[in-house]
Amino acid sequence: MTEERLALGRWGEEQAVLFLRRQGFRILERNYRTRVGEIDIIARNRRLLLFVEVKTRRGQACGLPQEAVGIFKQRQIIRTAQWYLNNQPAGRLQPRFDVIAVRQWRDEAFIEHLPNAFGLDF
Image (cartoon, rainbow, N blue to C red; front, top):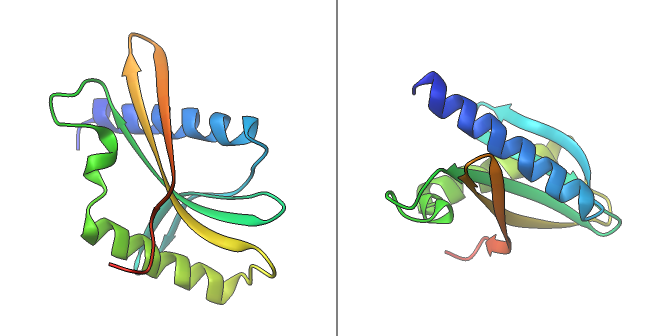
């Protein structure tokens, strides 16, 4: 992966964090990695525990950002979330799998939040 793509991904994740904070979420983890996978952002509010995949694009030549979260990636995120929940009990929080799609145009971020983008039923 090129440094330019890595920088774009980091920028997109930062935009997603700012978005979630404005929505009242507290960020618990960023780039949470285990031997089974990685989750970009883990966040919570009073009742929800979000496992968030962030996808960032500059244009639509490769499709919408959220289209890049296929079944393989969904399964990997779910396995990683299970690992997290086994090691960090969520208490009464309801787990949810979200996707945040970030499109960059010039230096502006256009964010689309897809709550409950996927779940355990494939």
